[in-house]
Length: 301
Image (cartoon, rainbow, N blue to C red):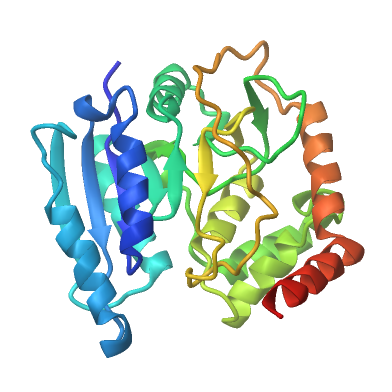
């Protein structure tokens, strides 16, 4: 099994970046893996010191005792997460054929790299599968691995053949979803507003690369291999992130054992999709969101 390069995208959170790297170094395959760290530039004096601290941190990583090889790419200006990820993934996946992608606020299980590399290797030639995801919502009774027509962005992997399909034109993606009357299915039967998220990207209200990647694979009818027990924990919902607020709605403990990636059949797991819909309904309903807002208000007093 040839190991995929790891791509880590960092910006201005040295404490989070340090934890992300430390967790990666506890992975079984870290010393055999090559890593590319993409450090985005600062916007102005307000974030300059933190960006410099991140760069000091990543340059201090000991390559001999950590990763097989360390490559650091520093942007001179701030280009934003979406452009950084799209450009970085495109560059490296075209050279290596496959990539594992992380952002600077994700902790990984010691078996994360094993799961991702085994899945990349096993399903490399299966053109019905376009994505692998290591995070899983706190949902009980899911198998170790399952297939779903959905793309998660918290610790993921893909191949060159899949990334070549990526369409950065949100307007074109949105138009096709609407013309094919796929909004309901894209939104898990109306339980999560993915179509609205894509519309907001088109309107300039967000700059999400992930919603465009999700829509791209959805429209191409490609499946994702998803971990059924979470190998990734997002620590970014503490109010420090550009694209995330302060919330623990998706908090889940890391699963620290090896997962079985055998899949009995190559088709979407209907039970898993139904479970996702129920989870979204539970966490994204008007009542659930209002309750979280009230709790945040009470905590701030």
